[in-house]
Image 1: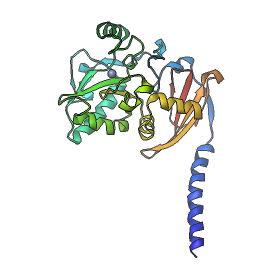
Image 2: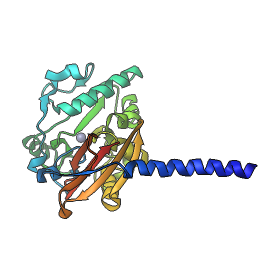
Image 3: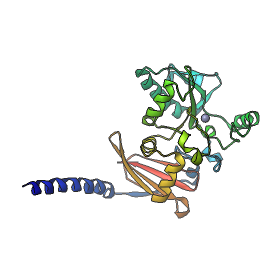
Image 4: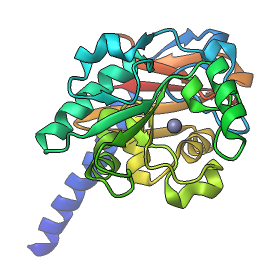
Length: 270
Ligand SMILES: [Zn+2]
């Protein structure tokens, strides 16, 4: 009797996994071509000491934070000249609002978007040890934000702790963790958050990957499937050298991002 029960439960479990895979595999697909410029832009673009931003990757939704503060009420800024991407600000606003519900509300923005001139100025002023040359900083992409706390340094302040645990839910990742210095080439920066969007931030948080590691995984394995907050995603890597045709599911939302290293990542929501 017990053997039968075991068999039935096993079949249900196996069936569930097989069914999950079939669900992804059997939907009708269609091929679409992506533009070459796409290789250099999108939320997963890697910019580091090795891969500088290219002109196609420069953002086009930069606004003066002060003019758009209604998108993130309660957020302080270190000076009124801070520029920020509208898309990033929108997600930042949602995150700050939820942090407030947990009683964490002493955030201050120290820097967000920096144009190439500003970056060159900073590099000149601070030197190579404290700043990156123009084009090699994520701040030039408009996808990064330096968030501080008016209560103290971010490695100990409640704001830093909260972000470290929760930022992924809003598409952000702690870009330079203390245990990944050898991979990122950048020392621990508890204030620097990068927007990569969901489901990528959730995957990187769960797998304990920095962006370099995540992109390397995708390049090697070409696919990652996951369920995040009840939504199913299929993430596929395409090497541009093999052509720029990608496979999508008609009528289903999808996102395309270059990796700035000759690849394109397509995220299909199922
Ligand atoms: Zn930064």
